[in-house]
Amino acid sequence: QVQLVESGGGLVQPGGSLTLTCAASGFTFSNYALGWYRQAPGKEREFVAAIHSYGGSTVYADSVKGRFTISRDNAENTVYLQMNSVKPEDTAVYYCNAAGPGPEYDYWGQGTQVTVSS
Image (tube, rainbow, N blue to C red):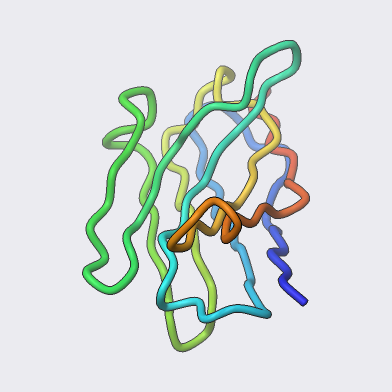
């Protein structure tokens, strides 16, 4: 059974930091690209960051570039999102995604809430 379980969300002040964690199971983690997406109230889900499978190359949305860092630990089947210098507009539910070799291999977590507020 495929599972992606996010954790680490919460309330953080503007300018602060937070690390999100996504623990995966039920599939060959190292073969999948991993990504983080977010959805703010009243808005569509948007791409945040992704990290490729073996090579580990990364890509970021312009809105988070230089502030967020995605990383993965293939031995622990875990992907992280380090969020620095957070802004109120980063407030959203953050979702972990695993993308395999075809659309039938696209998995999502249940999401974790991040609220940036003073």
